[in-house]
Image (tube, rainbow, N blue to C red; front, side, top):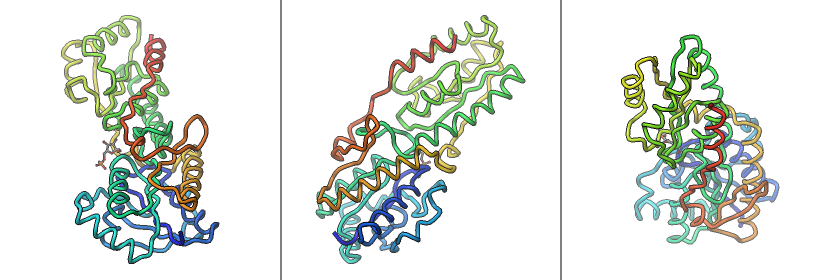
Length: 324
Ligand code: F6P
């Protein structure tokens, strides 16, 4: 292997720049060339790339977003699109790719590898933490801290006005962000897609809290929650059934994807990406690097794509106990 390509794809996440830096620097360290593709698979199809040397990634470890930009390419989902991408890789003499992203990125990588025999290593980068084969994805820790910081601020005003706030957080179909930020921010209730606790229970819990003397409360709602109502409908429903509550809604949205990465995410990205380059140099392919029980481990891309339903039920129990 003489030339490795790197790209970021799908929803961006804090720490992606630290990951790009680690790939470019590892390549420099091992005396091979590194090519950065812009806008994920779309840039690969369009031949939008640039050589990255050790200096071109200076001072990016602190920055959120991704200097390589990101996209979700529809064209790459077609065989023709992937053929174009493979032609570009061949012309650019790229021998292998490090793909930083989530499940869509890995699915694309699998197809590229199967159809065009291009060695691929995946690196999990998404705030959602919904990838199997790793305890943490790059960006998740920073997103949790952003959410907790935002909820702390909401709590200040909730408490001044004796209000109930429903705070919607990201996570597509996964409740990791909601569950952990909810506990970290001391939420009254946490609604996640993996566990439908039902509307009755929510009303009971809020009513009990009110009677026990609580004057303000926070309910964290995961965007993929299956309670059957969106967060605005939920707030209306509660207002109707518990008229004593002055309920408000805050949707945190894309603020959760931005910001300077936490130290944890920077170290995670660095460790995973050094290993990703080393695996390619060792002739390995179709793997994802992950962080399991404090060690960098690998799994196949197929294993990484198995749905991650590892919600820790104990966290729900802890949340219940502590919101008494
Ligand atoms: O995959 C990460 C994620 O942040 C999800 O939690 C969310 O549903 C989605 O991206 C939104 O992505 P976008 O608005 O960029 O399409």
